[in-house]
Length: 132
Image (cartoon, rainbow, N blue to C red):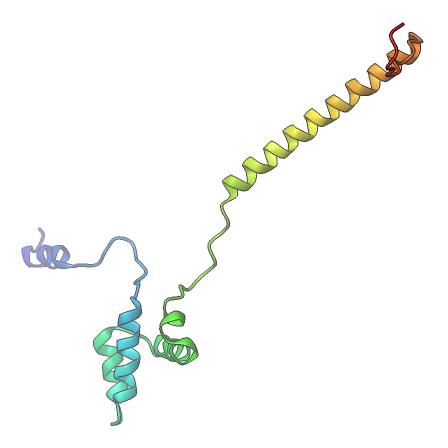
């Protein structure tokens, strides 16, 4: 036997299946830093953080960024820097390898032609202005 009230409790849980990182806008961060600056009484900052669901470390970091460069610093994203576009780099490297191969073949053909000319003892044509 299952208790119907117990099943209703399980269905009411609003926890997402996978966690998701919250993203804060520059305007939101600025507003929170300014609100925290206006807090004077003991415990006001704590209640602000609880109301907004924030950690004190976030507020500390946002304050440093705000004082360092206000809106520009607050717009910076946390975490690893995005990697450079590797597809463009790979394409250029492939093209470079193909061109090097093409150059090596051309130089080989030129050296073969020179050697063949020497073997056949063909004199090189000298440019002359006189008809023979």
